[in-house]
Length: 97
Image (cartoon, rainbow, N blue to C red; front, side, top):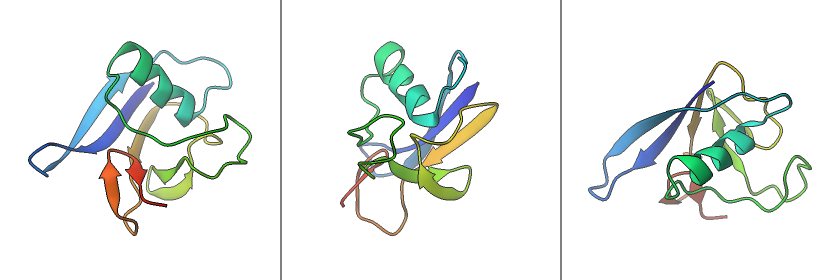
């Protein structure tokens, strides 16, 4: 699958970084982001506590244009993940709660 993440550079300009992530059965967008952090780019920022439980409510982001929890959205095909636009941005997908 192709995972694209909107990020903000040190200069304050937005950019989109794309990664080819190997698909696995039952993989969520959060799983894909964590794969990128482990194997491609450890600087990708996302906030989460639980995985696949939708209990902590910390991984909220915009996935393919819809505001949702990354831990429950299946990761297939091409996925664009963006930070919430109505919250102050800390970095990457991390916003102030």
